[in-house]
Length: 360
Image (cartoon, rainbow, N blue to C red; front, side, top):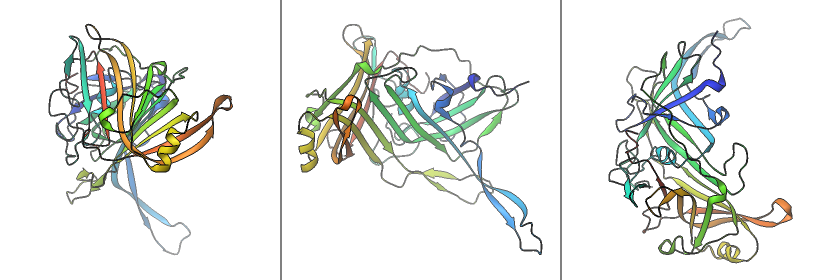
């Protein structure tokens, strides 16, 4: 008897340039352990209650289904060089219109390495190459798929985070990401998976290969190494708004992003000097690069890379005693617009995947 065994869970996905299309999956997704995947937001409905005062102690006469919502949340997913950019391409507004940008065909570097930059447009949030791809997802367990699985189109990443620590152990590799993906579309129950897929190589980014740089302007990003940093987390949030147009369905008609985004970088730094304390007191601009560099993938020098570039100003500086009784500071940086980056942040990957993520 099928049980929906957690260990047999599978996620399969594809990027789509057409909003809400149930695109056939092009790749298996590897979220790490099943506990990293929260599917509790699938096929949720607002509840409409028929409550009456009718001379009876029982108040409820009937219940109706209201608007449907669907949400998938990933957390603590080990970041791989091959897949990190696939997820980044679903961040709302990420531009993919030219070679080397977002989910489009990457730029060839050093013969056999392929680089991609991920940065959100300041003005465009529509689905497509100028404003970010959506994620079409199929999810279920292989022992229960003949009974039920789900196809969820139109998912867009509205809350993305990536964390870097040096000391990884067990299923925590030291470089992990998470996010929330939401859609105005319906989740369709399916009884078989589609697409002819095969297992793919995954090269995980591990924490001992992390590097940190802190400078005073984007023009010098990556110039000054800072080995006092032991932890960093970048987070980008863009709140969705749902338009409930009259169309005779239990779905929102469309999803929009009318609010400005919030970008934050939080770092933990050994308190061995007053450099960042002084920056906190003076609200000095900090240009921070956090990156993980792996093995060689190019013909001579290019290596697997996941990078966050961030420009912001400190909004908090809190003293904390970390392991072994060493004094550190948790420093929160709020992103500010930088004309060189074209935003407060830019994400970057380099790996061995030569094809556009829309087909790979």
